[in-house]
Length: 194
Image 1 (cartoon, rainbow, N blue to C red):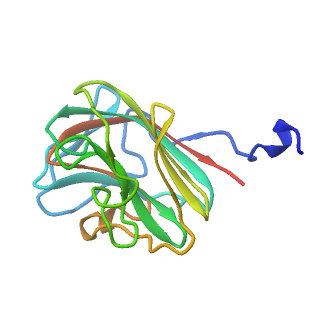
Image 2: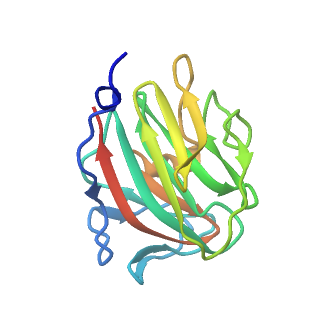
């Protein structure tokens, strides 16, 4: 058996994707009916949209193995405050945090099923104005969604149809969105892995 150090995945140092002052390579997404995107107290504020508000990364696309991590909070509203779309397995997938009335967590979409319908779906109670650490770990064969360092959703991708809902397509390849909810996103980092 390999020693623990040899079993660890080689990873580069995390790279900051948001400086707390400007959007930089993040661009507001034109969903139609989106709310305003601004910087408020060192965070990206996604204002309430009808229905979606979000940002998409226009810099280098990560992959195939990486972790994207951030802190997110719901300021006002009752639906998802952080839906993170990532490139995975030659397609894209979204880690939904607080959807379908404010508590559903899971991946959309797997085999055509939303986060509310597939095996990754479950409920987590979220408190408004509280910061949560949200991360998505991606490899070519699996995806993990974490909240406060706890794996809340995971899927092995072999033999699966992986995609995003039609509404989330403008968030590809890497994006963050909220649904009829005001949310803040900060401390965004990306860590490439081999």
